[in-house]
Amino acid sequence: MNSETGTRLKRLAQRDWVVALCVFVIALLLYIPTLSPSIVLDDGGEMQMLAYRLGVGHPTGYPTQILLSWLFVHLPLAADLALRVTLFSTVTSALALAVLYLAARELNASRLTAAVAALMLAAAPRVWMHASATEVYGLANLLMMLGIWLLFRWGHGRSPLWLVTLAFGFGLTHHINLRLLGPAVLVYILIVDRRLILRPREWLPALAALLLPLLLYAFIPLRADYFGAQPQWAGEILGVRKTIASGLVTPHFYGGFLNLALALDYGQQFLAGDILGLAALDDYATMTLQQVPWPAVVLALLGFVALFRRDWRANVFMLLAYLVSLWAALRFLAAVGEDGDNFIPVYWLMALWFAIGADALVRWAGNLFDSRPAWRRWVVGGLIVALLFLPMFNAVSGWSDAMARRQIGVRAAATGVLAAPVPQGTVIVGDWRDITPLRYLQRVEGVRPDLWVIHADAFGINLLAGRALAEGTPYFVLRSTPAGLRLLPLPARDQTAIHNPDERRFTDAVRWLGFDLLDQSWRPGDVLPLTFYWATDAQPDFDWMTYVHLIDENGEKAAQVDRIPVGDFFRPTAWPSGVVLADQYELTLPPDLPAGRYQIIFGAYDGSYRFPWIDGGKTQFLTEIQVVDS
Image 1: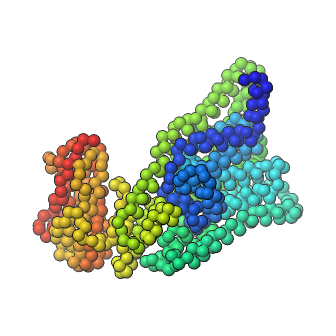
Image 2: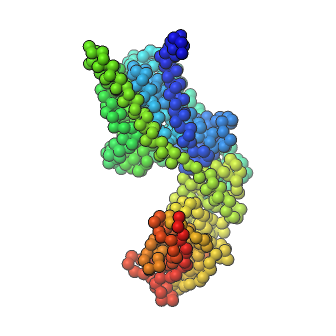
């Protein structure tokens, strides 16, 4: 390399946009190998479907996310449309890290420490997780950091105020976390320019820019009305609007537009319980140390102190934003038990403080040994190496977990469910996490669009089961089990389909009709998917627990599973007379189970009392299985 080329490269490295671009590219290189390759579970599956169909999502409706990811769906980025939506999350996450670098530079952090802060946060598990699968947090982080960076630039006289409020205005159309920054933004504006209120020519355009993105919310009623006007979505199924059952319009929309846009249902949860959320403080400390190494936390504290000397106004903003966001996250975690996503804004603010603290430490060390150049080179060089180690440590230590989080089998599992031979017009109900991939396949790829897939909790499943029974609608519960996704019919309509019929009378009201289990050899660690069948001649007057035991050749119990029959959804005392009910169990074989022949037995009990069957026995033989070496 000649001297002229080296000089050009050095000049490029001194340009912030070049370093920010490098941060963006490195983050992409970290994330892309760990992407979930197709459909994902939970909210991500919903967003993947809505991005294609331009539907109405759960609160806050996310109009900006849905419209922008719709553009990504139509870009030739990958063959799988669901993966294209995930790439939107990946790109926005990487862009947010690049803007974090620029925000740290605006606070006078060095290029090195600003880049280290961004790359260390890139490998934080909570950030990495949402960059590798479809989620709303990538765009949320981008809008938050864009607003903060532009706010600091305005405070330093480098950007107009309307550009700041425009960025935060788009944030108002997205995640509720961004709204928590409002008080801190207002305080910062007032302490930077107290007389701004006297200059309406400046603040009126800024106010207009803040409100302008809210016009995107018109998308929500327009699309809801569009779907409601389609003949196939008109009316109800089991008392549920078909627009809701289709997944194209969230039920929150019908609770009122403001309820959806302001996420009032979540707000009610937030307002419950401990007002300070201190019960969750230990959880926050644990989660923080899971995101970054402890030296990074120490340097963030140092950065908090140092920033008061460098830019006290910016530090006041960050402190207020941190405290409000932390308080809200603690409250939500204490009240709801949510898994920590609401702490994400706090982590990004900590990364900014880390950049300042690391820079202050390097400068202090350089000044301390200023009179001893040799020592200065070694000490400062050692600190730089240690700082560079932090993002590398985060990336290396988190790599295996990131690869394990890839949702590889979701498409196959959802396809298997929809391939089941269920009648046209069947209603499938289940947990939100599991049903969104099914809806994606239905609405995007046209797989079994004749089925209705509805989200319901245990109470809703029981309620809809009663309606389905009364109306004669085929009805299945989607269960997530150790044996995979299983469809449980309520009630079982085809008694002749029982693989191993064997009628036995349990009580005068209840008969046991037989069971389903594949006739095959099993290996240690396998999960046996059992299905029992019960018939009612009268409504049972008590509930019971069913036990299933695996017995070895010495008569010792090797494995067991116990549960109330259909208890999660339809307890025995709710069973009407004259129905046949399927009852599923998953018996997990121990991983160290020796090869050999094993018996499976079952029975019923309540506490320590084992119910006798009509034949007088308290234990019933089911079958024998063969376990072979793994």
